[in-house]
Image (cartoon, rainbow, N blue to C red):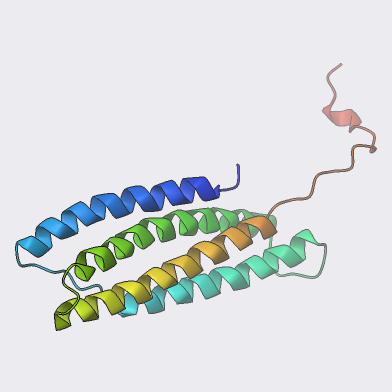
Length: 157
């Protein structure tokens, strides 16, 4: 499995943002302005903190320190980190589009609330993506020493 690239995350956020901008613009012009809940940011931050704690346990395991993490648990953490980075970029694009659409008529009180809640949620998405990328880096297994003799049980006769 390869690490998630920043380019992939940026393209994901851009695609999500453009699609969301079109949909939100149509909905806003129809008189329906979806208001993202503030609780979304709380949940995203909680997920980022949980991932950071699990990632630290993997980091200790990879370094050979005492850790409650198992190899299977580490594999789950790295997959969760990858999924969290992609999800964070998708949601970040959506919330950024909400800011852009609401900024067109920023004087309206409803749009001011929309800008604030979308901005807070977008910042929480950035935090989640950043933590996920750091944890992916922590989960990387260092390369084995090339000077070690090959395992004789792995060779074909």
